[in-house]
Length: 381
Image (tube, rainbow, N blue to C red; front, side):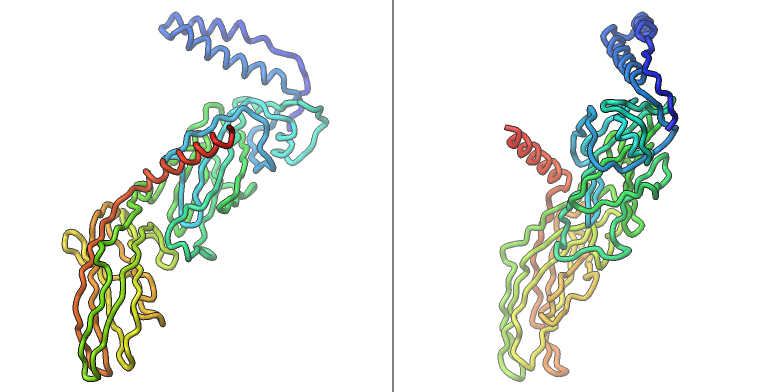
């Protein structure tokens, strides 16, 4: 930390106000010019109150949220980056020419001979950016699975486009972090960002204004969210084999939409995964249920499951995952009921179950934000 402990004040008010009046003469409104002047004078006065000045650069993850005049970020679907195991938002930010001495000590890793209330100024041509980040659970399906090992989403702090390893930003769902960075005055939107990186899919959110500035999967923020299954989604079919009558019964119980399945990775560009969950009753031994499922899209395209659905619980013991366009609004589940007895195969029948795909992740995000705001207002009351 560069020491310049003079407490003398610099009188720039007259110079700045004169500049404001000159701008007014050039066509700017007097009110705007005076506001700009007041802000500039305030910044100058704050610098003049500092007891020392930071060296250029510097970044740190603070231990607590400092007492600064933060601006809350208005939240919507453009102010979040989301992956399977976490979503990240910037809750509030501030750019300031000075910070409390204890914050400067955290940023430099060294202590100085300060008194309570002492301020430290940014280096010439720089300001301090302080941002509070919140990580939450995005609640993506399938909720019974999780990312593990190298598949887990990384959280990378970038300054000037360069990743920082010191300090290293590590956040899990439920965590809050306060980042302080020295940046050039009037920083560009991408000067300080946090990148979410999962299986080579990159997304970035700006710590300058809290907006999402890049995403390899931008379409996920307006993807469908709801699968409605037609009422006739169960079956009970009796079939006669050489060993007598056999009843095959089951039901399509649930449909879910998600951009990523841990065992499968991300869906193809502009596509999502549709997961269908089915239950079946065991058939009488020695018969075996060899039923299968496929999906038919509105244009007649047939889609096969991404992975096997059979388990010890039957032909649909595992969720049937299909890829379909993110803008699809309808599809049909085609279930082929097949029975086996030794080497004999019996085609019992084909079922068609219509599906309606709707909803919007963006609308859901707006609704959740409104509910959170109502809860906060109620708590304040």
